[in-house]
Image (cartoon, rainbow, N blue to C red; front, side, top):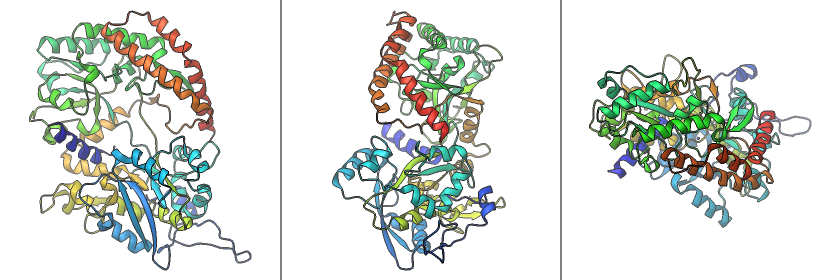
Length: 552
């Protein structure tokens, strides 16, 4: 059963995703339409930066080898994907693909680097020790910034539409060491929003005859009534004791893998704040009252939530993905409980009138794409990568072939055809698209077009796209306490990771033991222990990195 659930989750996550064309951005309007030419100076013969990309990219057919994460299950040969065929026709570049399943990527990347037999382009695995290390070790092309400046006008134009994306794609040195997947909709570069958070069973709350609680105290009362009505475990915490519910105390604790958060432009440790004790005390009380699943430390929110939903065991969940909100579990046939309905909510107020906050990843420039030092034609590789950020490349990678799998709608954006949405052979939309579009195999080369996924889920959702509504709800609080994942530590600063790990372990252990009543150590002593183990040094290190990030 769990294997079936995992298969469905992978499919749903592919649709949810959920790391390019520029359209007519303001930057494009200033420079004119993107069409295609290399400029050179007549006097010196030196090549100037491309303003536009010319197709084909080369007069005679050339080949490049591309190593990329790809988890599609329909196409064995990526060159048989219709969009890839069209891409080769347009660029005159044949790609020798080396597809790697995401689950094996880190291990196989290590083997690849050790072998010394490098492909021309590698995407997307974070380089151990940072991308600067990849340059120093002779793996990453040493001057990607110049390649981007001279041969990637579409990538540059897309970054120019978002200051946040530009900053994320730039190193502290001011250079672009790699290029990156850029998240956005059809013609934008923008975050995909917060796609996980609190959700409650709206059908069970209605059966209890209760209005939707808006404060922590009201939720306590609702959970008590749920327990009295026979709901076995009214609330499920994350397995480390954190929860999106802690945002009610202004503490970002959902999945305590990262214990740092922002207060304005200052980095603080959430689980060392005074308000964290308020969260712990409340969870401890709820746990003692039997309102929290006693097995929360082993509850897997991917694998165990369906059974919980099927059996009506829980009213409030601390962690639900947007793809499984509404009645998605029923629609995906993961449960046969057709009344189930998971309604997303922002963290309730601790006190009436409190403004909600969020802790959501807002990264736009995501997975690194780099040219290796083994590439014999890095200029061509850069141009081929730039094609992935053109409108045509974006549509080929996400929608397939115009007139077959998509048409251009009245709003000027691609819309899927009945071949995809109502396949005459009864094939699922995702299976059809894997035959036509490379990125529908859980690859995100070039532009990560989140609108492609939204359109697909909207078309299959009926009147309301609950997945998209969930993202809107969780993304609605104005204050986001999340620290950008694009911070980079220097080699010297990276030595702090040992202390970071030790402190993380201390926080996790104390959180679980405090909630379950096994740790009687006073909260103040626990905080003192954190600082004794080097918490201030960790905070100062990340503050320095964050300050550099803001200066990019």
